[in-house]
Length: 352
Ligand SMILES: [Zn+2]
Image 1 (tube, rainbow, N blue to C red):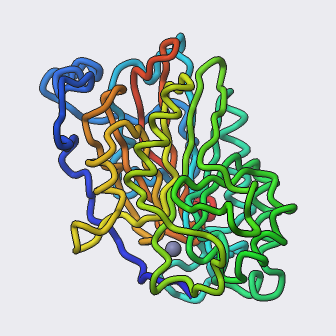
Image 2 (image 1 turned 135 degrees about the vertical axis):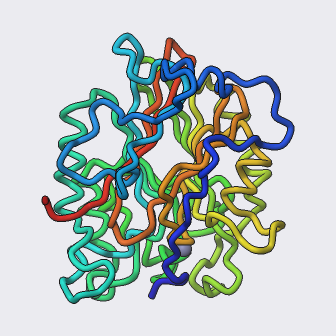
């Protein structure tokens, strides 16, 4: 079933800001952060306006409110983009059963759909994405091969997803057969599908426009070795994700993107620092603004923040697995310039 044990990440961004390698002058200095909060020495984060009150905030678990930084994320004059994200949903259409287990009653596609709908009602610009491993984990997949998963995500209005290793569990042909059910796009910048049945279906990146703000979204997949049988990814070639990310960023910046989002199925971090992961990616490719991760099933209580790049930030986030959480990152734009962000999310749980 799941290829990694569930891990609970201990506040990876417990320091408010980590500096990436080769950091130049950035916009989101500690001083600016404090000024933005109007807080002097009291750098206490405050909840984002517009967070839904009756779903528990992820960053609200344990009482801490959402992270907020930068300038003017709440400025009504700015264009605000709300980015909602999931990963490793693993065919969990129903909530986890009430069996006394650690996840009893959590998740459920219907509940997630309601939450997403309410966020859309409250916000003009919403981007909904998934970071892979949509398939595998319940009999829904065994019986219907992914049809239910794709149809449910389409009904929720997903915009873009990337491919996880388990999305190949019925082979390339099994995935291609389900694509007509997916009313959303798949992207992968480091899986070369040109010699496979997926040819033409998985571009490296896509560009979306939100009120005149262009947002570039690209995907990255994990190496197949020891995860996907050669016969199941026939014709799909894995390439170095770092080089692919650098190229994607150049292409997306050249197309006027004010924000670059990476949907990553690389995994959050590994003991081997040479193995590509979201943390390695953040350090190596500071042009990425958001890295929305998957694969390691990491429950991050806070987004990890690197002060770097053109916008002054790279945020890394991941929301566990099984649809138990919905991540949310808000970015405010002044024209084509990202001027502030907020990070938070929701536990998809029964109403209290
Ligand atoms: Zn995976």
